[in-house]
Amino acid sequence: MVKEFKEIIRSYQEEMLKSLQECIKIKSLSGEEKGLRQVLQYFLELGQSLGFQAKNIDNLGGVIEFGGNQSNGPDSGKTIGIIVHLDVVPEGSGWKHDPFAGQIEDGKIYGRGAIDDKGPAISALYAMKAVKESGLDMQAKIQMIIGLDEETIWDKTPKLLEKITEPDFSFVPDSMFPIVIAEKGLVWLELKKNFKPKPASESPPQHAYSGLELKKIAGGDSLNIVPDYCEATLEVKKREKAHWQQKIKELITKSQFQMDLAEHGPDLTIISHGKPAHAFACYEGRNAISQMILFLTQAEMQNMLYLNEEQQQFLNLFAENIGLDHYGKALGLACEDALTGRLTINPGYIKLDKQTLSLGLDIRFPAGEQLDSMKEKISSAFQCFQAEQIILDSLESLNFPEDNEHIQKLLKVYRDYTGDQKAKPIGMGGTTFAKAFKRAVAFGPTFPGKPKVEHQADEYIELEHLMQCAEIYALALKELTQVPGSPA
Image 1 (tube, rainbow, N blue to C red):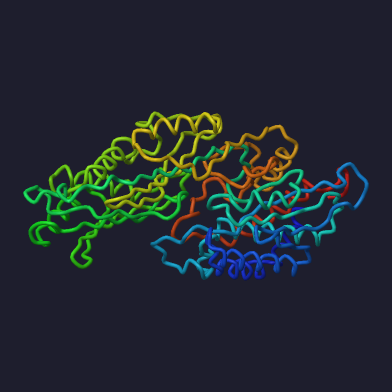
Image 2 (cartoon, helix red, strand yellow):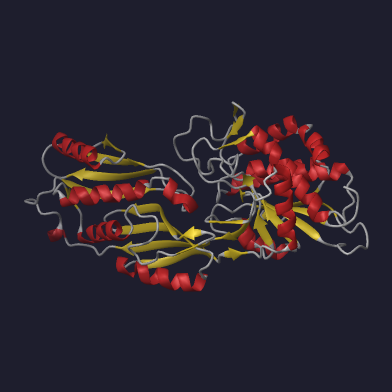
């Protein structure tokens, strides 16, 4: 059956690549309704053209399905699900390829969503087509569930699930192989604060050291990405601009941070350059927000920059309690387990001026911890900031039993396909739609040892990888749906 599926799927290669290119061209950013509706319509029409039933569920998402109820056997009426998402994170900066063109170069197709999650969704859809065309004797229905808010707060998906019946078991092609049975829990926290207005008499003293005053900081636009850009606008308050430009440039060189200085009218703008990464692996990136705040605290300590009292308090608290640490040690939140590793914290966005503060944080905690307990610990840890704490979203950790029959079937498919008979289930720091369902786990698409390119500039999927995923997913559907004892 491996050979048969491979021949069928390889015959689709040109069609698959064209479909993925068209999908990538649709700028379906999380939270932007026009693009989300457009990509959903495209994908459902593609499913229909491949011979499946497809339905838009009130623009909350969709389903593409076939089969089921073909006999009165033991699995009659069973449904096997594939859960994908078509929303993507913002493109960010640093691309050499157009993020919404689906360019093919050197055996790779580039674009936002290529690996997360449009490429795997296309692989899974054509795997369904291969299974349908193979004529396998199946009792179970295959149902692809399409989500539109995986990369942001899950407000559509819970409503979608109220309108459909959850499959008996599902896999999510949005993570890693061999198979993920444990995922960290998640808390998205926002700190908000309105600074107390200061009377005019308390404006920066004219005799003071500082020739620069902080007007605002702005950076980041998504909690689950390590921000690669942050800028601070400084008002020149004293002496000539050239003098303070030179002072800032000298401090940038001394700090060894990756930063630039630019002029915007009468003001100076410091630009902090980070390295993007997925928030669950924030330690693989370089956070432009954290870098900026540490730099500004240094400037203030060296009598170059005036901060009002509450700005100063916040920046110092951030530097002391978060800084460049990814693991919450200074906050007293550090914890870990063997399967999913250490708690991580990623400052995802910031807006600060003379009157207000808004700071968003992505916090991932080990699967061995419980959400309610972690919420209490997080609330206590961030009290030092004396700011309003808003939990934008939170998800319980996921632990799926390794001895479950579906887990063992998927593990067997992976082992047989790759030849790696020692492959074992794993845990991870990421969050997938598996958490939104009661009976789901993540299965691929990234193979062990492959670079993590999701949420990064020049995101891509190798063309061969796209085909291999389709082959594995076809084999998985065969194992999960075929009547026991029927010919392979």
